[in-house]
Image (cartoon, rainbow, N blue to C red; front, side):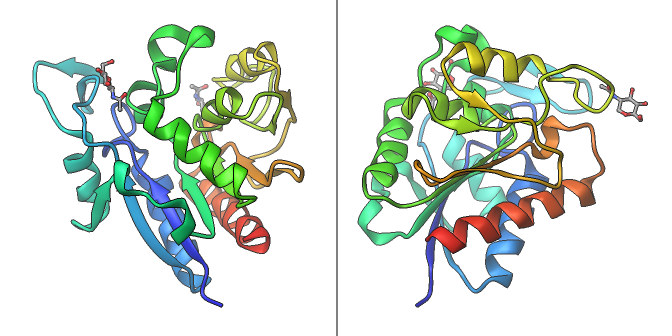
Length: 224
Ligand SMILES: *[C@@H]1O[C@H](CO)[C@@H](O)[C@H](O)[C@H]1NC(C)=O
Ligand SMILES: CC(=O)N[C@H]1CO[C@H](CO)[C@@H](O)[C@@H]1O
């Protein structure tokens, strides 16, 4: 049976949208495994547009769906149209778009909310017993939508390899079980059918991130 996988994007570019290498790696690994992929993104304005040369917001306005279409080579649908019954699994790559457009984590931290459309999709796959894969910062979405779940965003002690380790601490305070894992590893929450990996939460080379996402996709498809 061909596995059908929905991939939810949040724009295009690490500082204001989906992390491009993570999305690309996920698509390559899904393609190699023979999965059938459809991409979705919310049809809303981005929180802001960042000049990626300077890392600073500009006055520009851009739409999350239109920006995601850059990654999807035009083939992306409005998230409102995502029908959980048509898919076997869900993937949400990372990037600040997750924290800025799929939720308000970037602004509110632990008091954040997940965008209702996104929360509905996550809960829909979960309720249907279908597996989810989240990487980088996107496990925060599960922390809110699936209280008490087990996740990894890498390591919980800051160092050169783990500059964002405080995210793990915040997730624990939200009631999740955080499990330390290397960039090439995943954590599998068997009960919730949730696979997570750190990806670019780790200060690692792009090929290491690529390989870690390969493990994530393999484990996701095993449960799908
Ligand atoms: C990432 O790792 C490199 C090489 O170890 C180091 O020079 C750099 O400072 C690290 N970056 C961060 C943000 O810690
Ligand atoms: C999808 C989503 O929630 N997008 C948000 C992106 O950020 C702006 C500003 O915070 C919100 O208004 C959008 O709703």
